[in-house]
Structure formats: structure tokens, C-alpha cells
Image (cartoon, rainbow, N blue to C red; front, top):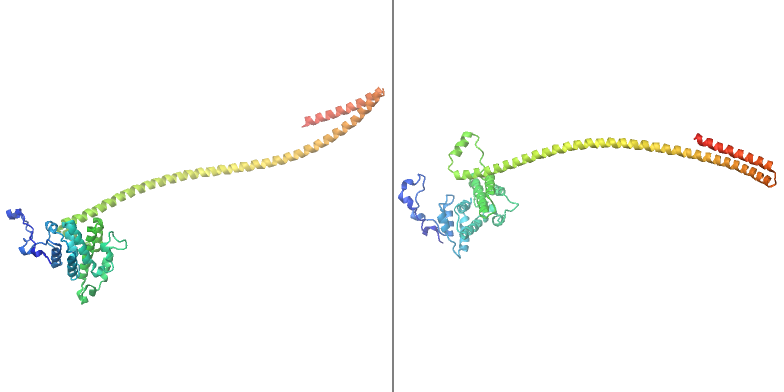
Length: 375
């Protein structure tokens, strides 16, 4: 197997030889010839597992100098299976993934390294039965990093190869939880399933969970003495972005609430006006209904009165017609007798009949006139 022992070291920086006084006091010791950086995937994996829980000393140049060797995939998988079997606390995967995320590599090398680390994670007991979350193209809807925490809390010492239950201390369990969540979160980032916000939220809820210092002085001292300025800046920028977005949403919601209150007040005013108009219309309608009822009563009374008058008029007409008919009939008889007397040259008799008939007719005419004037 090819390891990093036979790979040339990165060329030294000429400027470091010219002016050693410019090197910071905290500069790491120069790498010895026997500590050459790996140049193959197998060499990188061998080096990482030899380091264990120690930091990996890699550079961007060394990572990009690693090349993919054709025909070595089976050997690489066998190697990762063999080495990861002894990595009970998953110390190596998060460090390899972090180096890959920070330093990068050739696309083909990065893809192969992600595949190999996925193999290492998939054979660990805490991923048992959930290997699909490591290779799925998208984040499974039924999985969260809190499930990993629960699996770590439930794991038994014998599940990870420890025979002595007391050997699996709380510190080791915390280390396993941190490594598992960190490795999975970095894997999601490198696979393109997560963005910065999702990574920070997952780590904040499961790994970065130490309580806030109750003492302001101690909290300030802890932050002020921290050398992780880039890390703190990332978190600060993330939370500042969340705060700005939340403030923007709050301002928008406040403006929207103000507008809704204004619209509500305007609607209430319109409802009040319409209610007053409705009450007025109801009163007018009630008044009109009363007037209609009164008019209907008057119309009914008028119709009743007209029916009575009509009945009386009919009776009067019948009486008048009967009387006039009787009077005219009697006068016809007188005139008929007078006509007969004229034909028989009985003129005085005829005149009497005619005068009597005329008097009766005149009397009836006067009676009719008096009836007309009385109305």
C-alpha cells in the first residue's frame, strides 16, 4: 500500500529562509523529511487514521497535489473498512471532511474521498439502518441531527466494540456525539445538501451547546481571549444576518399590522355609517309600511262605502224607474184616450186627456229636477 512516507514534502517558502525574524513566535516547527505530506488517497487516509484525534497537518497545495489513481478503488475501500473499524469514536471522518472543506482538492479526488468517508460512517453502529441518509441526494424529511444525538445516547458499549461498560465514559459519549454530528453536517455541506445557515443551526443545537457564562466578566474574558477570530466572525455574521432578517420581517409585520389596524378602523367607521343608514332606512321603511297600511284601510273603507252607495243608488234607480215607468204608462193611456177622442171629433174630451197627461209629465219632470239639485 502506498503511504505518505515516500511522498516529497511541499517545497519550502523562499521568503522563510531569507528572513526568519518575520516568522511569528507561534509558528509550527518545520516538517522533518520523515513527515512528508501524502500525495495519494491511500496515503492521506493512512496518515489521517495514524493521527487519530490529533489535528491533521495539511495544506491547500498538498491536498490539491493528491491525484486519483485508477484501479485503486477496491483497495481504498478495503483500507477504509480496516482502519475505520478501530475508530470507535469517529475521530477521523470530521477531520478529513473539515480539511476537504477548508483546503479543497481535485474534483475527482474530492468525490472519491467523500465516498470513502461515507463508507467509514455507514459501518458505524450509530448509522445502522440509516445508511441512506449518507448517500441520498437530498435531506430526508424524516431525519434530523437530533436523531443522531438520540442514537449516541442509546448506544451500548458493546455496540461499538467495548467490553467494559465503565470504559464508555460520558466524555467519550460526548466526543462520539460531537464527531458524528460534525461529520454528518460537513458531509451534507460537501454534498451540496446544506447551506451555511443549516450547518450552523445543526451544530448549535447539538454540539455547540455549552451554557452561557452567568458572569459577564468571564464571558467577556472568554470571548476576548479566543484566538478563533475567523470562527467567531462566521457565527457573528450568521446571527447578525438572522437578526437583520428578523428585524426586517418585524418592521414589515409592524407596518402591515399598522395598515391592517388602519383598514380595520376605516372598516369600523364605514360599518357604523352603514349601520346608521340601515337604521334610518328601517325607520323609513316602517313609516312607509304604516302609511301603506293606513292607505289600505282607507281604501277598504272607501270601497265599502262605495259599495253601500252603489247599492243605495241601484235601489233608488229601481224605485225611480218603476215610478217613472208607472207614471208614463198611465199618461200613455190618457194620451191614447185623447187620441181616440180626437178621431171621434170629441175635442173637449181630447183636450182634457192631453192636459191631464201634460200635467202629470211636467210634475214628474219637476220631481226629477228636484232630485238632481238635491244631489
